[in-house]
Figure (cartoon, helix red, strand yellow):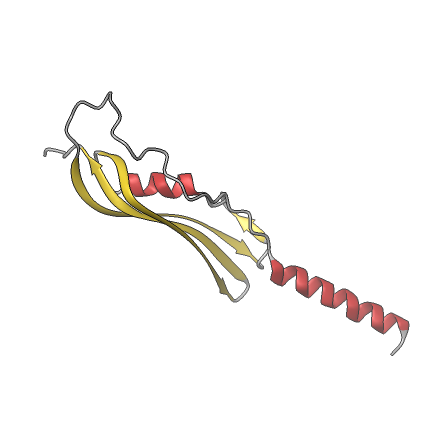
Amino acid sequence: MTKTAAVAKASMLIIVTALLAGCNIANHGSFVSQTYQDKSVTEELVRLGPVLGHSCQVQFLYVLPVGDSVSSPKAIAAAKSVIAGTKILTDVTIDDGLTFGIGYSEQCINVEGIAYGVAQTE
């Protein structure tokens, strides 16, 4: 094998490895910003039901991020917005996942919990 061929092969191996490695730019943290009843909330909080929230980002060619980065606070806010009147979440589970497709990957942070708040009257 010539020196040029060896350099080309090594360069190709480095490029392919970099493309497959991707960048994980998540802002992940397993926390909830409010898990108690604030003293300024004078209404009795009632159980509103289970909620799910997601924060996802696609990476084109496994390394080029498209859109905002994923974050736990965004996923928590999405879960709290599912049911109108939600004040707090309890029994919270925060998980993340990474899926691969042909030419792209998608990273998501998923929040699951029970919403408590003020029941909305119609």
